[in-house]
Image (cartoon, rainbow, N blue to C red):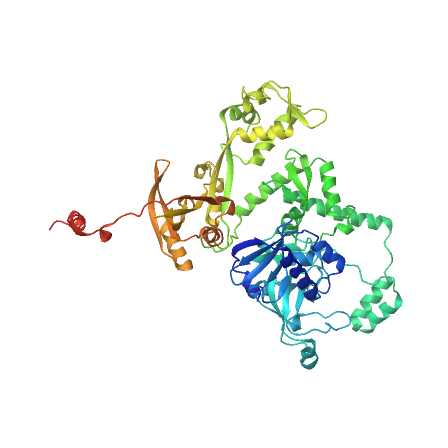
Length: 606
């Protein structure tokens, strides 16, 4: 079932495939995936191609492409079971397997571990799913989105469907988009309909197949339709064509809607660079208002890429091309429209806080919920007394976007931008606030905008605040609660004790409010191993660490990320093996005279 990849997947061993094993894999792929042509197989298995076999817990073998490290196939039962493709392969070769389509609302049940039932399968136009046996692989997709979202094995045969009809279980799902097997890859997405942990139909309506075949198809469509549907089809046929002015008005309205979504999204972006596709799917689409639709085909831009280029031409964003696609590398916070949307977003935030309807408070440390780390910055003395005082900014702590907004406003008001708009003139105030005497730019007359942004970040001290639940979100505006520096990292490393004994040590839990004894007990229950906590001295400060028996670095890392919600960037696994601290002695473990002395020392007076 698809549940096998819902709770995690642990890779125990990774080995490159030999040439004979790679040829065997190719032959099995050819036999089990009839939709792959010889050209597809040649592109997938070029000569001297490297493949990696990842042996995972549960007798599962995942085959990754050596060039991209993308998982494309997986074997069940230690290689003796059926070979199945991952969604990454089906996105690359959509015809590799026949696809069964289902309504969009079925996704929620599939995500929760349900199998695909036959009543939820929408047959093709001819009403036939084809001839097949029990136990063959089929892909699953929702109506309105062409790409597969999962892979399953048929629970019935075509003969069973002919006898019993479309009832009962149809597919036993083995792998689904956004499960942990998907997480082993690059986490790319085939189109805009694949959101975070959700798949929806594409916004653009697909053009009808066989367009131009004419009246025969329309007559067939009317023949199978109800009376109301016939009237609707006749009304569409009799509808007058739109004039050029009406078409242009529709395009202008769609352009305005897309632009509004874009600016509402980018004012919330703090971490750059961000892929352009991720901005659209994760930040623009979730901001669609009720019953609002965005279709690039009905706009003057036609495609997302053209829209992004237009925004770069208007000097709103800076784009860069990478191997994995276009990314937004910079946002012009001083742009007039960006400033207007930032003011509007700040107003909406204040209005939302003062509203009467508050959401229900959530409990602390929900499993799978990542803790939020708020970062803010304190300008250094020269920067605060110079540029910030000139711009009447009295805040002690500011976000990176607020600081950039202040610096760009200063540049704009003092006309320090060069004619080519790529550099900034260095006046005495900027020189004193951002540059040191040993800096190469100290005696220069201009610096690039990129260098100005870098010097601004260097001239500020970072502070952090960890938000453990929704109650803490209200504290994000209180500068007295922030701690100097970035959030501390939890270190997981392997240690050796008494020669060959291996232990796993975890330290740095205090700032994240993870009780060491609680984590030790959690690891002990999960892995059935011996654990303890012990005091050690780090940088002249005594801290308490967790010590677990055995090599459990990757397991502990997953526990901290998924069960305790620690962001993965703050959990570090050291590859070095260090000497573990000696066991602490106690009175229970001592013998003879020492035990008597300890007992006498702790005995209460009568």
